[in-house]
Every structure is written in C-alpha cells, then in structure tokens.
Length: 162
Ligand code: PNS
Image 1: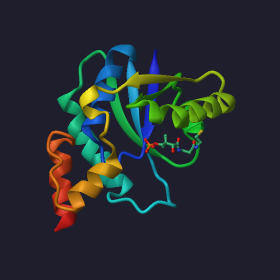
Image 2: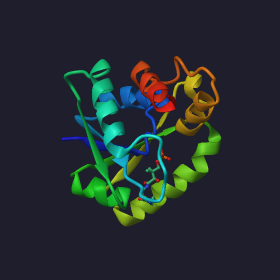
Image 3: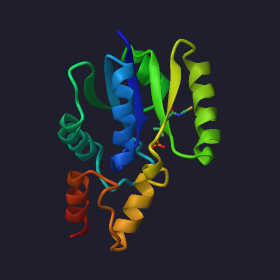
C-alpha cells in the first residue's frame, strides 16, 4: 500500500495544487490532502471551508486506481504523516526559488521521521507563478484569476468579497 500525504495550507486550493495531485495519482494507492490548521495565521477560508471545497473538487480528477481523501491536521507534518501510515510526503516545486525552502523542510521531516520520504513533483509551467497568496491578492484587488483556480474556488472567493 503506497500512501502519501500532500500537506499544505490550501487557502485556497489552486490549479497548481490540482496539477500536483493529478501527477501523484499514478504513483500512489492513496493520497491524503492534508490541510494545515495553523492558529497563528488569519486565513481567508476556515479549515472546514477549505476541506469541504477540496472534497467537492476532487471527483473532477479522481480515478479508480488511487483513493483521494481530505483531512486536516495541527502540529508537525511528519507526525501527521506517521499517524496516517503514509510512506511519502508529496510537495510541488514551481521554480528554483521553491527549492531551498522545500529542501530544508524535506531534510527536517526526514530527520523527524526517517522512514518517510519527501517526493517532489514539478508543477506544469503554466502554473509556475501561481500561489494561493498571489491568487488572493489579485482577486481581492479586482483582478481575474480564472483558469488559475478551480471554478468553485473562484465562486467562493467572490462570496467572501461580497
Ligand atoms: O504549501 P504551504 O502552505 O506552504 O505548506 C507548508 C506546510 C504546511 C507544508 C508547512 O508549513 C508545514 O509542514 N507545516 C506544519 C508544521 C511543520 O511540520 N513544520 C516543520 C516542517 S519541517
């Protein structure tokens, strides 16, 4: 059983995240999208809202070879991965600028849980500049983000704005 977690804030889920999940599907039997509950941050969407949104979107990309589930967690990603029985942590890399931060996290997570490997996947070029923070900023200032976030996310962002 090859089980991975894909951890992140997902505030909100972008098409870049979906691209990484799609690329992970052939590699694992189960992927848990693990939404971090970080009480120190003031998110746009609550953890519950993020989980519900992701659960609604996943059937668009699901196949019968890999089970996709959504869960939230607090604390260390390595602990959550261990608790979930995962043997891998999936992370997406968009550009070389992501690498240093991701490398530090991967090495720390490996030190914390030596049996769990981090697997890096390269996001599609068209999403190389897409981040949740950029999407929120542009949208809140009246810019268009269609094609960069799922339609449901765009609709929920519009609701927040009103
Ligand atoms: O994609 P994001 O939002 O930048 O995700 C970052 C995330 C959630 C993967 C990272 O902040 C994390 O793992 N946080 C949990 C706390 C933790 O384990 N910190 C040590 C990482 S080495």
